[in-house]
Image (cartoon, rainbow, N blue to C red; front, side, top):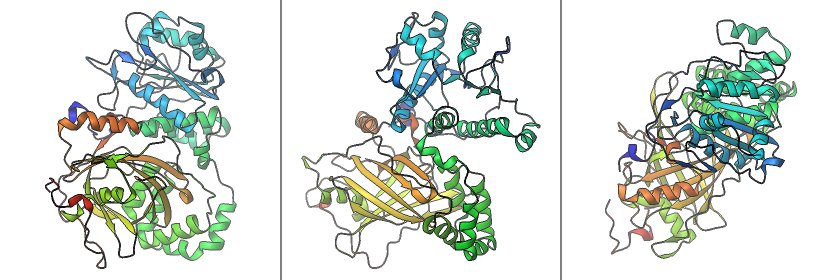
Length: 530
């Protein structure tokens, strides 16, 4: 299968130019929030977008039944036929999908997506005008057309918040009615010495720009949730972004003084803490890179005491309930059972040194590491199942090292579902996995997971596409793979391609007491080759 034909290739993330604009022609008392981003032209695109069809005539959009009762209203304006930084997807497709993903967080979050053609022709129905005029936040991506920019300036007076990335210089960022200063050498000083609303505006803008610069669908949604949380309505999943009180320090000193001293005495632990302090509490990408780069026994003891045992930061998180992905129901012509599902996880371990290798994944924190091996095995104790992911990371200081974890796996209520738990650097993570699809010949598989590290205040979802050799499934399987991704609410352009080159010497050894792994999948007569 040619990867470029149906899934995005991740690439290095350059620093985006930090540009901020607003309507400069006439000053207004109140302005909207607008996001503008450089967008590249695309020769061809799908003519039909969910919700409306784009043509030379105005777009017709029906207001969803929940829009009038929405607790947060957003409008995304996008450049016509413009490619996004997510591979083959246009900005219109990306923001339509993001609108769906916002509803996983709260079904009352509504985002209306329109393009430049729509702006130039003007809304054709009262419902369209209402959704635009009553929006809390406007998101504008790559709009530079002079007439479209003029339309935005004329209509933005009654909108509270406006932010732009690389749009027309006639537009400028505003948050909560406060202009965001253009980024320059004075911005840092303004952030440090400003007080009240201006300081909060600058800090919020910094968080938004950082999320946008990471160029993935999770952080686009995170960025929008930050704005909703700060300026519209509290977002439950972002409650850990809010400041803690002095009880945090008191708790740490009272309960964990020895662990704190040990951490400060270890260079890796000190670097990890400094690194983590620069991450937002809910930023799993930043946090996990810090942890994986500098993990050590002192960091584990520190986290176990401060976070897991005493919860000094007062953090919490729950496993996301959406999307509600269902497991596959039939395998090789028979209803799937718990035993068959476990055999599928164990996979190729009877023939190879591993069960599966990860080809691509959706989670930006966990699925982008190179050389990912999955090992599922039954333990010596009856009914026990374990999962050991082995992966390579490039640390923040440039070293290439192997890492591994060890999860306990328990059967879920439904065959094909499992509950995973792991102590990862002092913090317990709980995860709910589903086997979404696996063909009879075990040539590939798609596993979906949702999880939470409650003591760290982080929740997450993700999916991994696996094969026995780390190569993409054959092109003949493309339709089935895409259908499986669709059941997870995932677009192919959201996937990260795992680099499986230069993977020599992975630590794949199993504990000595582990019995030889045999499954029903390799019974005599099964036409599968390793």
